[in-house]
Length: 239
Image (cartoon, rainbow, N blue to C red; front, side, top):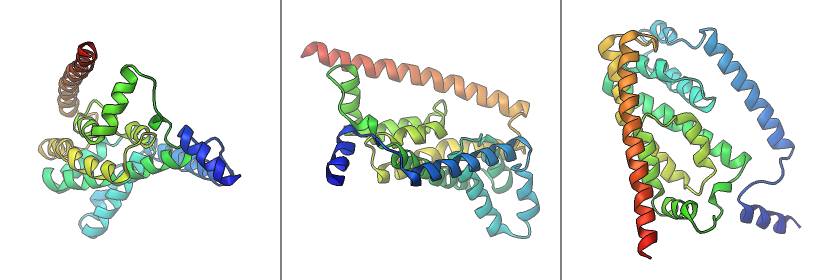
């Protein structure tokens, strides 16, 4: 019976039953998420903590920063202050690399959580049409989709991690594309924190730069999406 149940799950691409282990995990996950958001709103996760540690414990402060970034990514807590702080404390290049490592590890854990709890419903075959074409293209060139989404700041990194966990994307592909293609935006934001000497997301200079970047990113994204859909439809018409 267990064999047929497993085959049924694989065929559907989604877990039909959530047992005691997953229920316990979801309760613990929800509690940690609530605690994390409460700590963020009360200021307990402020990057100011690093300023008191970085001189006395330089190595430990880096580990603390990466762990904090991992937690924020998993629980969808805003990470812009941490990315700015990385540049403020360690400079644009090194701070950007620390940020990329933290977001990659956090994203990978979120990716695994979604896959373990829910499964891969987006990996099942769609009927013929645009959705089927997009899925076939993703299965063939999944890393290109991930690379474009990672390097493009208009896509929210946190929710995307969980969404990718529901697809057929391989874990190794997720890891290397996330790390490599998040380095440029991570370094760019860290560089802003370094130049402006701030890790406040409410800083006027930061808000102005981020706003311009997001507008440009949105314009590029819309252009690429329409171009991609047009290429699929043109191929369909030729056939």
